Length: 510
Ligand code: UN1
Image 1 (cartoon, rainbow, N blue to C red):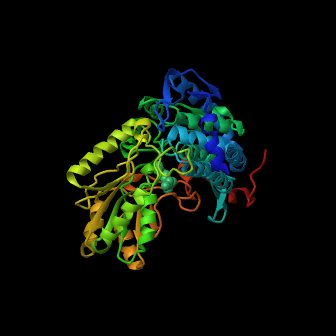
Image 2: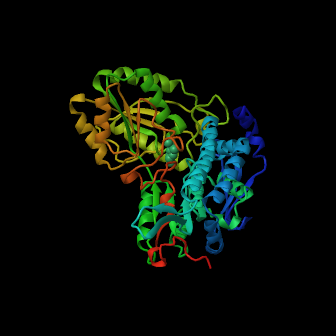
Image 3: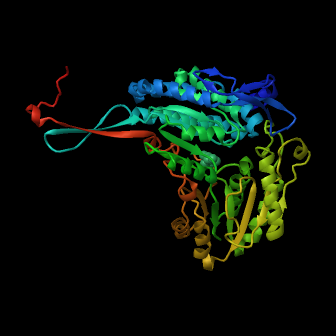
């Protein structure tokens, strides 16, 4: 059993501290300074150290990427797919080690860590499949007699990929796999909290046969390295997953560049709601709400933030939710019995505590789970259920295990959905009802890239539930969907006049 093996491996696998830093041309460089990395599970546990990329490292990586990319692009989709599939296999082979590291560095529970490695594998295989299908050569288009028209997709050049700490392997690998599949080289900036797992992924890509010059790791603290990458003259696009504010900052930086207009692929936050009516199956609602709002310590952009309950069933559902919260086990993520691990760091915990203070003043905290001794050891935050006095109490995403409940009057449902829609996010949306008309009314009123009916609102499966939002939640294209690679590529239409050669469709092959 992989989970048990990973549980044993935790601690053992990390006995030696890990060094992460800039990886350029396959070499780990000294970078600037070495910052120690502590586990959010136990802040006294030193995991390793990371050094930031310097300007010179970034320039060197960009230069190598620029030199290596054209040949990678010319190899074509099917050849690139073979490398991506090898990466998928390598991730699978190293599952135990990666799961152990995810538990230590990111505080992921074993279930979440296993799911995350699988998702990284899925991204590699799915994008390999798209590369084979969409990048195998020009597509012939119908056109006027006397012409041959075709359309081909090519890589843009060098993509900057900036990824978050909450899916430090799956999203990190997914962005890179997409950019590579489309024929690009990549300069990857991992989240500052999770450089070790990112370094492991980069090493695996290289070991899977990828020319090291096509993928550099450029860690950094704060925004310096990210800003230097986005401003770099030799990049051709940016893919970003993280907070909405950071996406605005990147957007401003891109707008200030002269020269080519670069594509910006952003996947950002959500203010995700779930609407329940009186016909919903209550036990199912409770299950799906706990998984969506409290599972993964609420640290998913897809997580449920506001639950809308109709007056008539609110008391009963809230009571059952409180009981379900009490039954959750907060603890060591490497212990298979644990449901909720830590939040990512002290900053996150402080921000969440500040939000709880606001809830205590302006709303009503209904239930809170006590993390017990873990609260002193690591960055643990006791999950909260609170009742809020207005449908638009929450202005923006609060990233952690806090469920806000609002009781609504079904008579004024359009006002309630309207208030949520006005916030401008559009990521996930849940509906629990056995009335189709209710589900349709909610769907029509609230923008969302991913709508889930009578189930949890997290855990989009690659290739099955293409994931990504609109408005304040991102630009698309959806990750793990059939159009995922298109903005990583340029399209070229080629029209050849064959009538001028007496109708011979073939150009002379000289
Ligand atoms: C994120 O949390 O940054 O559907 C996005 C899900 C995940 C969310 C990833 N794919 O829950």
